[in-house]
Length: 233
Image (cartoon, rainbow, N blue to C red; front, side, top):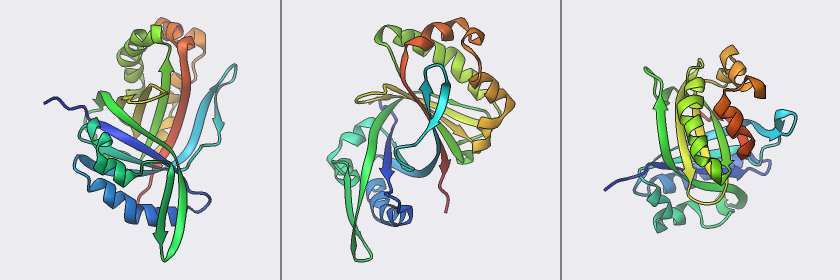
């Protein structure tokens, strides 16, 4: 049977009390979710920056909706539709629990299931080397989806994976809603986004872009880039 590896990205608003959220969620929810058959593991992240595309101003930093994110790796995207997973992760956006005898409540601002499309890894490194990540979400216009994939797979991924500090790139399609497509760039450190080569690729003007990028660029929506740092205890 063919399987489609996937992930679920859960973003939670700590409501100004990250320590309590982490104590409760990591002590109660993560063990319950990772015990579900087909859930391969979980990684915790804190957001450093959110960039959105601003007409005429390029990518600008804006406030992020949540600064605590957990990514669950799935053997197959169907796991995310199982009753066991839904019961463990929560079926709505209100997260309720008990910690040290008191009630806690947090808002789950995003829970999106993604099925893997592509995977590219630089030689000699693995995801164990990842300490930061860049998550890019994009929705191309319907008539430009094929050209969007051609540009991304044949050109854009290769450009960024040639930058120092880039470990792995995985591309995903959302099972529901928009944005439609996500790319997760695993980095050895946040400083990978400060290298001269990355700054060149990300800072080009429209006229400096390759022809297919110039053609596809105006037809992409919901272009958001989030930069995360791995939470390590």
